Image 1 (tube, rainbow, N blue to C red):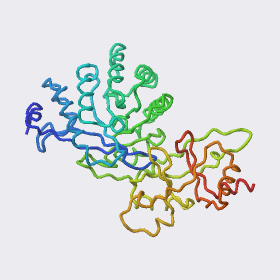
Image 2 (spheres, rainbow, N blue to C red; image 1 turned 45 degrees about the horizontal axis):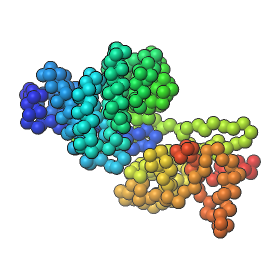
Image 3 (cartoon, one colour; image 1 turned 30 degrees about the horizontal axis):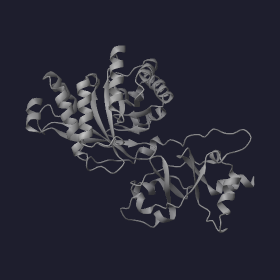
Image 4 (cartoon, rainbow, N blue to C red; image 1 turned 30 degrees about the vertical axis):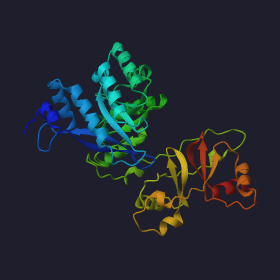
Length: 385
């Protein structure tokens, strides 16, 4: 049954489904992308057909504002710290009136700027004048962060120009059209490698969208995306079911700390280790420990900062539906990435009472952010040699 967008809006039958976006390193849900849905059994019933129909009926602005309001209102089931991604076209963001309405709507619904991000669908052929208008629009939407999703992927030179003209960009979405045949297209893989390198140069994080098969999952690994989404991990729902068990296939190591020539720093002794958040389920933690028998525990992070440790011995005795928060040991020891190993060990054993408990794992951080872990065994071995 065909239904007009005007009728859907008038009758209040526009719905929202949420597609999970997964954090590769933390192996948890990073965000829910809001997708507009029409009435069940009607056409159009999904985001892009609805948007196209709204454009045909000259209702794009009203449609997108209604979709944003509904998504924010429905965004109540999420866990704290999980973000909401909202979609909008660049043509509307060139309209100052629309931008003001979006900002007022987000303020009115009390959308949290630290939890709300705008996905901007960007054509490849914007003129310099349009870029200038768009840059102004994005600044007016701050502090809400912006994700760019190209209708057609640019080359690295074109993308660099976009980054220079739109400094408010924080994320680049590599869409399903680029992922779909990636395993069999060597030239496309080279193109995306160049684009990913340019994104890192501008400190822009990568999102791989539309991952549906294991072959595609393996094909995007060299791109080192920070986030992934696609039917392989979960389909849109209200709320959807999510499977994070495949994320170890994309495991990335901790950032490399620059070495000093004249002495070895504690950062040089780091051991690769998976990390989790307070919301990670016990089953995932057990699987990670099984895959890393050398680790006496699993680090827990809060927004890229060390929060605590889950000890292997505590996990092995549990069989319930616990999450990481229920097993967290917050009494951890943190060292700076450039501290000398001898100084770190001396600090561990020389507290005011002379009785400091030696930890199984040392957390290493730099400027307050997690870098990796050092096993006490590795620290002792280094100092003995």
